[in-house]
Image 1: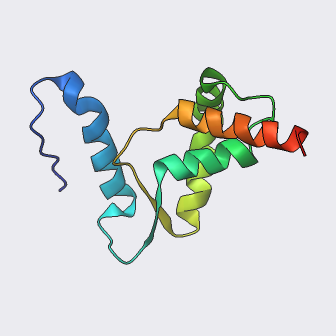
Image 2: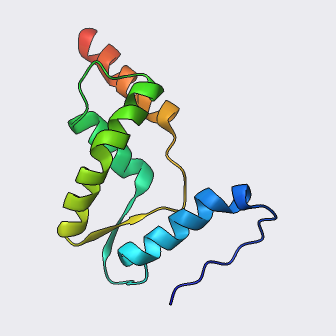
Length: 108
């Protein structure tokens, strides 16, 4: 049985972080000998490698993630890796990075 403890005072404060912690445990986070990937890095990799190149805005990337992210996570888990869900995905950071790569590619 898994239990998540928190100092949160409301359900809303616990919902996101509590779920990420529990999901991390369920998907192998309790096994210290597995390879772990940070959810931010994984979302960035999926956004760069799988999302259409014109998807650069955070809202587009989030929508793509909702549609495609679970399939990509399944592939990752099948490979024996786990995901560290301890932080939220920063879509603006991924968007800025993707835009930066695009600007660099046209200015070569």
